[in-house]
Length: 97
Image 1: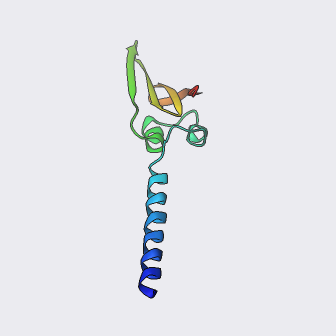
Image 2: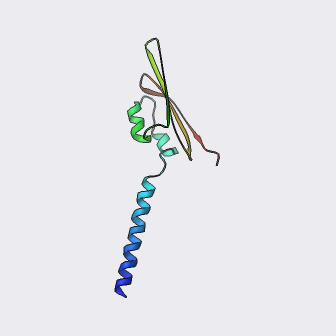
Image 3: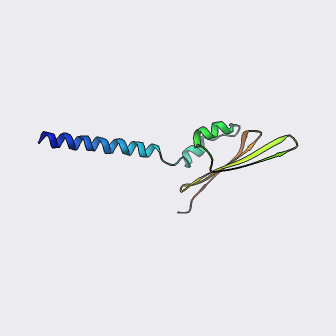
């Protein structure tokens, strides 16, 4: 009987551990992470919060550089526009489903 209780507790601990690991791997495209992004942050600071973007574009005009980056998944899309490497605009659009 003790062996089956120990086995049950081991399996329970294993399931709990795996649940925590999977929860940590969840989407970074969410309201909490969007709220962490502030005007003036660098692109590297944003990437440290959201990870690598799913889409980027860059433009340079008369010595000014601008870029746009998007992070998209089933939760929605976070769009960030950078001017000279700093956040100037941000938007979070939640998925309809």
